[in-house]
Image (cartoon, rainbow, N blue to C red; front, side, top):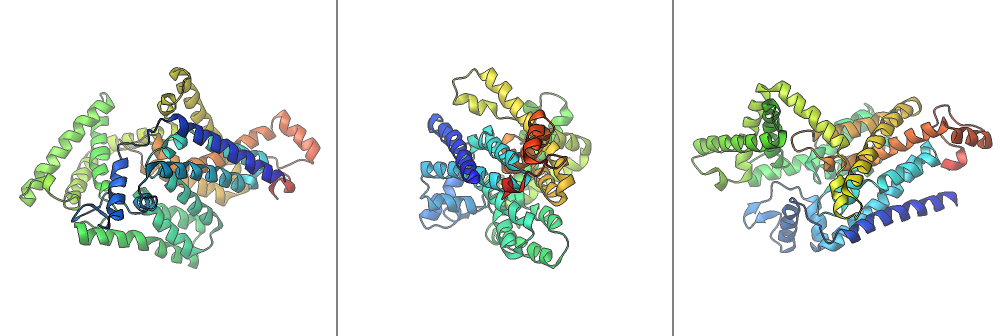
Length: 422
């Protein structure tokens, strides 16, 4: 009965935050990337295949999210509603998962996720973030159990075909599963879909890659970002300048080698030149690249996206900025504490949470870094934060009162009475 009440409360809070945000967003469902997903979805609906235009294969976007859009007939509002419902389901799933740490930790983790500003904001956009977060949580959950290697591998492959940023996440999960026969099966299956898609791109577009966006990002944000850091001026201004110059240099090389205008070539033909130019710059500026990565990691971890909330709120923008920034900082601090606490009680789970969060924050740490790239691991951060908050509560007067009434609990505050987690 208590668990049912808790689930109802968590679902109600998550539904309230998500659909209030939806109501006040005034139909602002698009971000600069949105049309690059809707375009292939509409081509699929018209029976033209996964293409950007007739005869030109889509190589920038992977197929899972456009297929979901096509399942909704590319109607935007139903997609947005579905994404907010996914957030509600995730809040409940986080509560149920975190019950192992205690009822208080479970409720805290679910509420932290339910009120997370970037998670609300990007559920309201035609973007992959919410679907990817839900799929990642399922993959994370199966990985924590180290079971069903074939299913786990297939889902990991689908994760890559939702957002290529997950390309090497199987390594984290393989380590978490431990070195055993089922781990080898998992790794083999996890590579099938990404390799098959890369082969498709090689055959149809001329480049063996899951997505050509990786080459573009490497040049435009990692190489250009390293040069912008080395310039020691205003980062955003220098980044735009370096992006323009590097792209021009790359196109000059392409035109010299290919004897054709770079813009007239398919993305798959340009991608190898972008990668080569980017790697040369990064190799020449290793310290600047390291500083860029550190900067990106801090942005991914602590940017609050407060301005997105300010757009749909009547509260003073400065107040929202302070509150959102403080919220993110406190949650990250609690999550770090939670991982330390879990390390003493459930080392495998602590390692998986730290590995998952670290992987996704680090792999997207570059000139393009923003709060958006933290969204996929907000559930894991919330779980750790809930455990950290419970550890603090256990050492407070409230925890001591609970101990007196419940017969005590673990010294680190993780692990409520059996009936709380039953």
